[in-house]
Image (cartoon, rainbow over the protein chains, first blue to last red):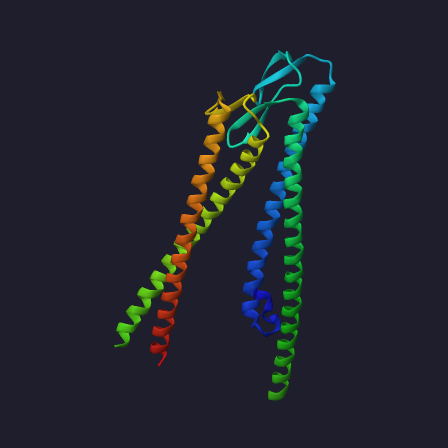
Length: 153
Length: 117
């Protein structure tokens, strides 16, 4: 890994370049993490909606035709849902089985989020390290310049 | 003589950046394939919990069409196979272009050292 290189030995320009790379990586991973969390909350919505339907005695509901157009409808059969399992396939499932599908997906996303978070922590540590070294190098350079200008006087 | 070297140098660096671009493109398509592969694998796992009696629909355009379990399962398996082949194809391509890039890099360095001399 590139981490094996002693960061202290790199010239400031390369360090800045390196920092830029890490910055964009961190941005990328943060975006992915957000996407995962949005997906997770959508799946949780599905589960709570199933619970709502199963728990309510109401038969009437409004069926959305578009995002702003509804028609009144009635629930004829409970405990029967069409679940999107991905790539355009839908399967008819009972309430319990539907929730199993969503639960599984949420767990999977949890595992991935955890991995992403670990990577983010690592990258942030690296970034802090680089910033420290850069700051020290700048201080050193300033000192040197001061000394030089002092010598010529 | 040195103008010869210079044109050679320019030619190599042109080829080098061309290769870099195409490798970047390949890597993008590789990651797209990976996403598709993962999605299909999840669907396949789901199919393993289903059986002949499951009612399966496929979304075609905006219409849900009923599908046979056998058909759907076969379709997914075929798709996974196809994506695996695509991934292999892209990966060998990436490898080839990387070795080629390494070659050109070496040539570039050679010409540059000659130019400097």
